[in-house]
Length: 368
Ligand code: FAD
Figure 1 (cartoon, rainbow, N blue to C red):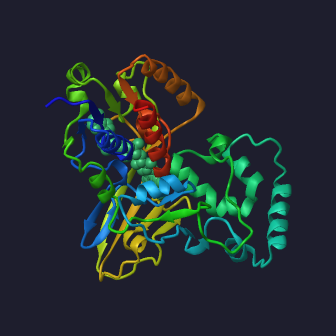
Figure 2 (figure 1 turned 60 degrees about the horizontal axis):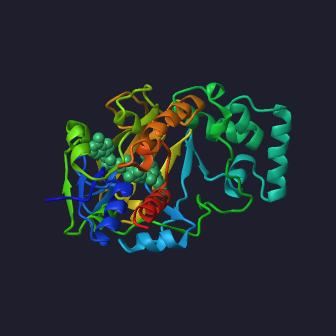
């Protein structure tokens, strides 16, 4: 069969493009190196519980068009992300809000909370922040930093906060209301029955053929010669055979356990913010959908140093890597028949609503 497009990767970017192309009568071949579609938003039904296999995914957006778009493919529930922090057995609400401040200092009014933060910031006496530690303290004071930021961030990045650049924390959400809703967006929720159905529906057209367990690099030259146009959502440095060296990532390891109890931690997401606990969070999947099964499934999330062959989760967008990426981007611009997209193709962290928007922008340009 003759195809108009080859889409490399069946994540949200590739699938959105494939769906839109098929809607316009184009024939699309999708290849995916994993044994399932969906990329990192993939959820798996285990005993009626939707397990977020690649980390907790909560859909949120301010953009009504994107919200309506994604709602074509699934009905969403009213889940509101309200993570909890566990610091050495003490529980605090996130994001930092009046509930957190009350727990920390016993203060009950916004004025008292602001005064306390200001007192701590002044005492620390930081001028221009030289690293992440100084940046965080100058934003929220020492108590919040020590208990809720330091250990978590150091585990996440595998480096001391004093060795991390300050730009990682440009802003810290601080709220002087009793509001535990993590996001400020107008729309938020979890697709009832999981995320995989969204991608299944996107790829359901007769004009789309999917091939799983197929790595683009097994047949790169042939694909490039055969297909008139390629949407490539894999790693951009790999595409160019690491000509300028590797772009850095942080990786994650997930450890899931099925427990014979109804409710393990009473919340979908609990962050472990001390330095000693080796994982950063425990996800209890059933709470995303208010499940009442007799069992529960929890996943511990361990941050890992990335090396070639590992799953690349978070790009490390420091100056060194961004500079390298710019060089790869230049090479990409000289490939008129290849569109580089998604989080790996653009070496950029995208939330789901952003990746859909980015794919729709490419669609608009491609089919104008
Ligand atoms: P991916 O989902 O990574 O898809 C790329 C696909 O390409 C993969 O399936 C991969 O296997 C395939 N591929 C790569 N190379 C090749 C190759 N050589 N040959 C064939 N196939 C290949 N977003 C939110 O909005 N809310 C959240 O709460 C949220 N939580 C997150 C938590 C974690 C831990 C992570 C890592 C991300 C989170 N995200 C969240 C972001 C979300 O996962 C991304 O926006 C989305 O998955 C990006 O889609 P994508 O298509 O760009 O990439």
